[in-house]
Length: 393
Image 1 (cartoon, rainbow, N blue to C red):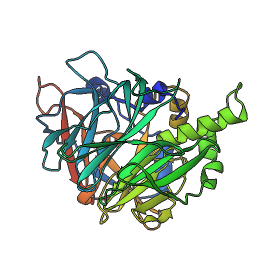
Image 2 (cartoon, rainbow, N blue to C red; image 1 turned 90 degrees about the horizontal axis):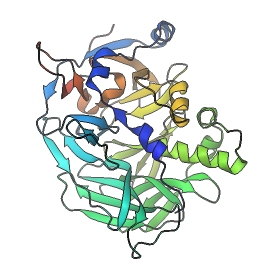
Image 3 (spheres, rainbow, N blue to C red; image 1 turned 180 degrees about the vertical axis):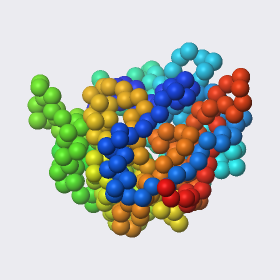
């Protein structure tokens, strides 16, 4: 697998959780954008200002994107903590249940490599899976050509037990993975020969079951992806296409929705695909207000409507060119999962919209640094939640 590690993608994927930044800055939309949204959809306000402490969760300074399971547990990827100056290349993973129980989740690690990167993480109902990219072998037992990666699927139960790791040897570059309760995997990757996305069902032992039919024309025809990963002056056609495909697939996410898995292509208006272990169940095109691109769908149960996070194209473009977007304006919308129609906007008090990570059981939940409730008390990383069906403004 000849895709070298991309440290710039790793760096911009991290969220810098500075309490001072979050206490002093607020991701508010411009007046024009706010008026435009209000003219298109109704607004509902949710209060997430009441923070509960989480004993067992470290005071993190650098965290990856939080992932929510369909039962409402939030999985945090911690790369740096307050009492240590360095930032790790591989995160420590913690789960936080709706009952505020904190657990440290251990994944089995490949042996014989100096560098490991967590390419994706997905929580199924009873197990979790991490796609791990390994490079820089330490001995001849794990040979790799220059720039080559070894890719593994590491699984464990939700307590970190029953660990298993398998190496993938597929005819495409695997980049994201999800896990069904049957034990089979859903793997998204890149066809190196044609620079096309590939979606496959993979057995528990890492062998290919079958390639699924994914309409790759939607990637070819996406003006949003073209704009974000635009051609550079020295690019050949192959280099431009490769950067677009690697960038787009690196940004793609698998999201749990009950027993189903959603494929979300961040930075686009591409359809959201639904899967179970039998294959594709359908696709839904979300219709956000003008000027917004899909950033995420929050994990939830199949009884819940979708909560969709959006950002403007400029934020995606800046990240794709190596920039860092601090407190980029984001918006949350409730969406009908069958039609893709926006129901209303969810305005949250307390965290930034991008810090809200869970929408299970008819609630929104976030783990963030909240303002202290009393004077002379330091800010703390805590848990807040609120019913999703509040008053309309």
